[in-house]
Image 1 (cartoon, rainbow, N blue to C red):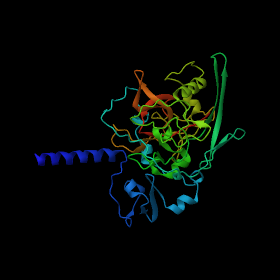
Image 2 (image 1 turned 180 degrees about the horizontal axis):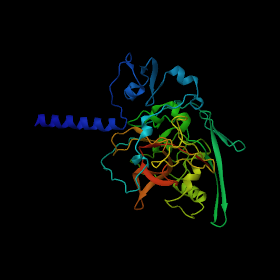
Image 3 (image 1 turned 60 degrees about the vertical axis):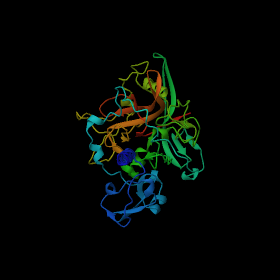
Image 4 (image 1 turned 135 degrees about the horizontal axis):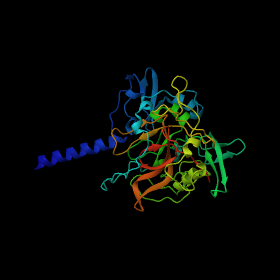
Length: 392
């Protein structure tokens, strides 16, 4: 009997270890700091146990910080992320099959076990000193269409979208960010050392495409900047009251599902209410085509070799940053893909099913190279997407 219980206990411990390792858990072996590596892909996982560890890749040192292998501290501190002149490296993820390009299924989501008690996104308490600045403010310049986030000094392009259509009774006026947010939200989760990321953990991509955020980070579940999104995240139903500032600069907020619907209706002159099939994406996508010989970013042509870029009529300049996948039902997890073919953005709204809010899904909006619309879909809260903020 004792031997049977010992075998069962060992099996349970092994199963739990595998589960947490799948989505970036703290488990992992320490690497030899003197060992040289051929590429960043060869480095071990940057877990909490590896934090501040320095390893060498072809003679260049990288330090493990907040779940990412970053250039050594001297290089990291010498230049601002947004002013990096490094061109993003080409990635094998850019060649993913178009079968996985759409972000989220329009089918009914799978049910998840109620027995899973711990959230992969629930933030742990940590010091405010993690943030680069104690200044919580922003400066909006309407003449130059810029927003300066004084938390880290980054400057973003903005666009004022104003549409008055008496015939459709549509009157719309909002100021949006015209770039993806690149604020480094560093709050840890129970299984991840950071809750915001650069594509393929390469900081050069953050300069071009901004950062990817777990939904809990996008709505600021740690309550760093305000309380509306505090405590929200995976396996939590909180129905955050709007507006939710989330990770956005002060005076700006994460758009709700209804605000995205209003944008789509205003842009597509053929509709008076939101429809999944619409033509708004063509007018919001950046007019930049991907060309492997000339550029490392932009919209790829679709599978039929038709241009996937848009006309960017309203200077929204949506670029296809791709996504970070940590879906509990996916294999493998913690992978990046869909760069140059799909743009996805979080909203502040939780997904509802049969009139009830769900604990695992939230709404996001998507544009793709193979269609001209903006689609509202649900997605797992533990996936990571870019963020576009809207002015209060």
